Length: 554
Image 1 (cartoon, rainbow, N blue to C red):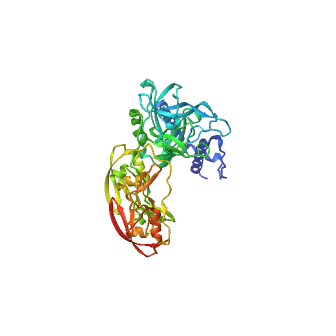
Image 2 (image 1 turned 90 degrees about the horizontal axis):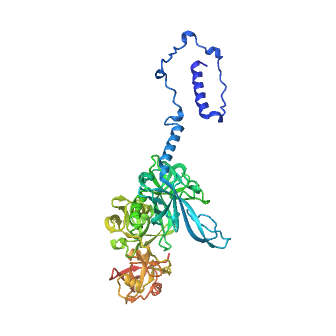
């Protein structure tokens, strides 16, 4: 083995030996090493040694690999600096409220109070611990709504131990955000820097700082492991309905009970979002945490500071993603993307703007579906590829009373519709009415419908003496579909629950009046498959007739 090879080996040994320290034993290969005396240099071959005359002439010490930009030391120093810079902005939250329970502290979703089924309930003072952060030098503190909801006493504790009583300025349960106010000199407050969460990318390094398990100022690191998630929440209006916080960021940085309301920051220390919830069967970090993005925080917080409340913008539709199978049922390009409108709520912005819901029934993989409604493909020029994109647009950019332009596809043609957003309703019916009756016989029309009521007649601007059956839905490729009958497409609160209205009202078969849905079913059953009948119906207040060739019940 020549001298150069040995020097290379020794260099490698020194590097790995220093890096691994004494914790690693190296299993060195058998080497054919020469005797050390053979390594001695002849005097003529020895390099000239230059002795520096002063310190300034001394050669620079070799740079440690740990302190280079690629080394662990550099990364460690960066983390330390981020922590030092962000920590003054992060606070712990203590919230006390009177509850009726049994004193068993078993946080539920995400970190609230629970009860033990084995104890008699009684009234007591319970405390919840969470996190928050400084928003401005005026003393506004941001946290999650669920951390302080129902609290009678709220305290904010800074990293230096300063504890101040806080009052609630405003809260929005539907975005799980709350604003507190403390009395503190501006010089003592360090507002968080805010980054643009719309630029967040999967794989981006992030840092979470908060108060997990009441361990103040705890820091964890990880990456963004998902974007564009939805976080389901129960409606704050007591309606029993569920909405979702859109555009939520997913991270594998450890988030635990008490992190709620804390910060998730980027490598510049800028706020990416507010840590809010975890996905875990054991109430502890399982590698999936959810973070409310800063773009939503930046939109809602100033309104909460100004008004104390935030009204969620509302279009008034339900819908789903336009998948290739649904597009094909609607004779659209299977590659077409968008949000398919299924139902339109009566008297909503969508209803007033004339959006059309789906009234044709079909099947996809054996599952009943409804199609035929408007397909929203853009909002104010921003592309809408699925229903979640539409929800995210409202959350990011839209406000109540704002006028927006929806680009849609209706019956295969692109059109634009102007729409003025309203506030999400605060009341909704909870009870379900009976399901529409399905006509079933050998002769088949292919509709489902309901009886007319005074409320339906009034909502559809029909005379109170009109009798008949309101079509709720039409089966795709059925005789009713092929003849051009239309189902209902917008929601109506009947007082007992929401029903669909707006479809054709069948008033007569072959000139004989139809009293109700049961009467219509009897009439159809009196015919045979392939019989042609004349149906009299009311559409948009006008009476018309059409011929239908009945089919055979599938």
